[in-house]
Image (cartoon, rainbow over the protein chains, first blue to last red):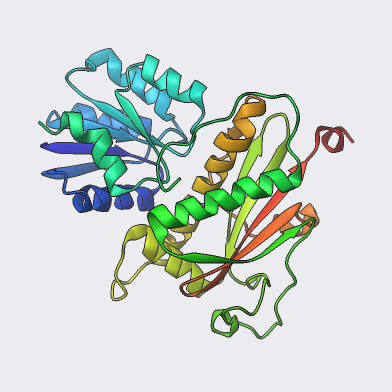
Length: 124
Length: 192
């Protein structure tokens, strides 16, 4: 995997996910970070090498569900996988994200193993 | 459940009792600490109130193992997440400085020698409160209706106006003790 975009309003959670990716021995060349969906879209526009997105759901400015919707305008589900990382295990929210084009989700709390399982299909 | 996927129960219309909410919080804390932070031991479960306050002079180091069930000092950090829906309320995670640092170290997988900025500690405490409330939402609130939870924030001064919590859980972990407290407002209380 070349480059992963992590979108989360918590800088700490972005750091945690980056460390968990390393601990799970997921081969990632570099990580790009964004604090919300709006910033995430800007990073996607300026960095065409991003090949997977891990996104929080409950964020200010633009939440994760709206972010999925916006990403899918220009990026097909097969070309740019999006995995939602969220505390909210509610079926309705998960289903809207999946309906709008998210490829999967991981629920917090997570472990390196659960992150690895969620990303396994996209590791190449 | 050690990790990952929370399974919401079947939807029902009855509002859960305080003790039920507290039980869900307890299982959330256990799961979150086991998965992402490290060991913690529950010292006390108080229904219908707050833990007794520690003596003024006490700091984290004076909160000895097995001692207590007392709340960490008010001078510590307090991260809050509010929930809104068929019932409104909030969950607060309160910890003294040493305990908050230990929680942040666990979450960030930061070794002892790695310095942590105060903002990182605050952010980690907020993230922990967010996960605990998210767990409560998926396990106890989503089954009874539509709920939203707020972005986590640090409580600075508004606590006194809330009155006593509906319940509290006190834990010990590396660095000291922390407390998880639940406030709720019933629909009738909101109307009044």
